Image 1: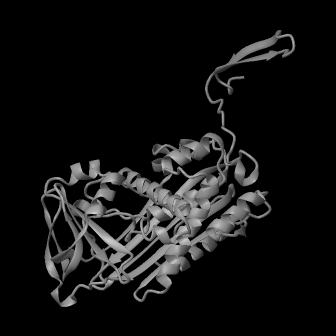
Image 2: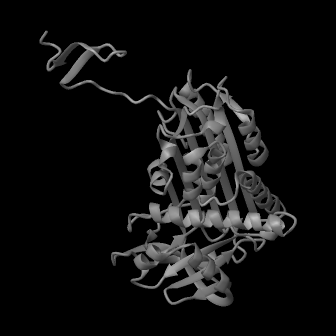
Image 3: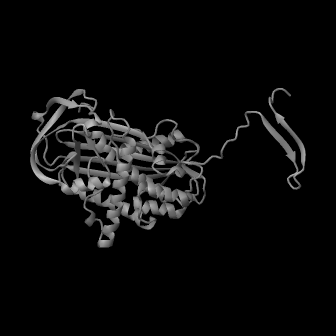
Length: 409
């Protein structure tokens, strides 16, 4: 397939490719209480999706693609080890309102339900995998490891970060590449894993779906695509004649393209001309819910570009700005992981890929959280200073002086 970049200025693709966060809630568990728990998790992930989109969409000329579900899952595993203010900040940033006792089983049920459903549908495949690599002989708490294995199907794998960080990096990247069908060949670049790394938590997601209403490849032809700055670019424009869910609102036109099986779908949001920036700035989870609620079937001719995108992000500063700065500093409290206050998040890596053509969509993403030993702060006495030699019991100063130039003698 040829690579065609499509400017982000006219099209939003939100929540990865499909409605992964809002489908089939009633089937996730038995009883109203269980359904309510899963609905609360989905709402949290939806709000986090919109917050993260707004934080990442800072350049009006660049494409953007990411998997909020992958990022949220990897951070949820990390959140399981948080305590105190670190836990509170992460909950606010990720919009986790469920208790730790309810949150992680809900993630496990949602993952399992999505993959179980797609196993019986021709033309749709969805793989979600989690993993945990820990420094050999580091004393992780059994309760933390049991929780991650039970809820996220991610038993601890031993790694030698201290002795062979590059070897560990290769092993982890190999796992990511396998789980994303070679679409994310390297999540962690050279030097990202160091001898001080103690734990890596990762999520990988791969989606392959054929359209319920495929585009006729013979109708695809180059046509102009209008950028925000008024310029045009010629792109392969696909055409389909079918019934789609549509909303023609005051400020946006929405169309939903179902995949085979009718459960997963791509939602396209096309703001009115000259209204992209204002729509994007005001867009939130409530507006998304309102648009989805108003979708109605309509017979239309749909023309949209064929495209292929890839993105990568280092999310530490973005997540800190969203309200969880302590997790990335020496103030971090991940004592539920190993009983100490020695670990902090040094890096959150995310890569995503999507290809959309006449037949359907293939997408993959991976997220990795690196937990590192918190090194003591360094104080550099590298400018003139005063010094005293004193009796700490009585307070008497025995000697006193200053150093203006240590080389002067």
